[in-house]
Image 1 (tube, each protein chain N blue to C red):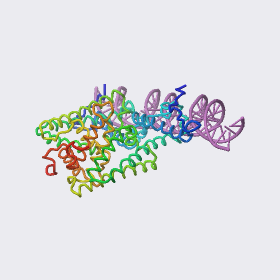
Image 2 (image 1 turned 90 degrees about the horizontal axis):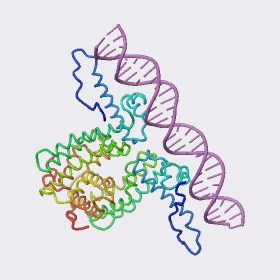
Image 3 (image 1 turned 180 degrees about the horizontal axis):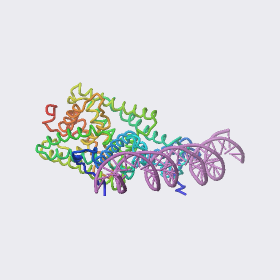
Length: 224
Length: 224
DNA sequence: CCGATTGCCTAACCGCGGTTAGGCTATGGG
DNA sequence: CCCATAGCCTAACCGCGGTTAGGCAATCGG
């Protein structure tokens, strides 16, 4: 079994009196702190270059104490990758199912994807670069999510081309190109840069949906 | 013993008499073999996860023998990154200086970039992912090449927009998007796939230069 | 034809880092 | 009020892997 207590219900209102947050909740919070710290360090130095003691120090404990929360270093990496990848699917794919033309759905999806990634840059970088360090089973699971995500986008691109809303092109190539643009953002965007996120979102919707795919509605920057 | 007769180059009758290939040449060839093998393994397993003994085994020698060719493991990584990055600049940037419109020069550049990368997928992947493992000095050098490369492309995009050949957009965003598409190819293209390189090149020239940048000349797949 | 150099070898060092063992403290449920 | 548990600690293990030391055979320039 994988990550048995992945449940994320808010802490049960722990009664009239209070002894602080429920113990189960504290445990989940601590795990999340560790995962967040690990993601930051993994993204910066690379998974293999980071030691358990480094991760531990970032959350103010000793290396060996991490084993009270995770069974191994690989499980921490797995938690980082799984969380960001699964949430990417859960939060953004619904936009592809919403009502509207393929162009409108893709535009909303692009916005959602970019806005999702902004506060999760480091997790995303880890999820892109460190898949090779996962166990085969874990890697296969993450790959499954990713393939599904990309296929869903490709299907919408395909639909838009068949309906004539998008300019004709190879849908596989167009999907690869779109994901190149979308995922590339984690490599160069950082908040203190010259561009703010809203500019990037508007610009990328135009470049991807309006220009690359050729949807007239988004060809100029008029709509979001 | 591991494959003692690794010799592969048939003794080139290099002249009247023959003493085999010049010794300095043999040394360079051996270094290149090591770098090539290392790139392949680094790309597959990640720099930190690969041992000197792994690299050595791939070229049929023992781990310690590598130190007759490189001073350290990091120097091997540096050689991988420097070679691919410098050659990328040397071989492709001239297309941006050739005569022609910005669109024509960029189209030639896109083709050159993709054709350059195809036989160097693994080196490119290493150059993209493992920069953090380089020493600060080496990393700064590679970063310099990369920044220059991207800036030259951005300048051409900027010129095309100011001349009216390209549709208006933020040149920085357009350059980031273009490089997202161009560099993404190493993540998904492999020869045994369903697409062959020429299809990808033609498709990407259209998608990047014709569609994203809006050059009429390349909007449909008529030209290269 | 000889000696210096090249290229590779075996052996070993040694520190780093994932992991385990076992103890101490405080907390909170019964 | 007590004890089971959570959460963290110190100490240590131990294998992996980068690196060094030193030797042996082939080769090449003189």
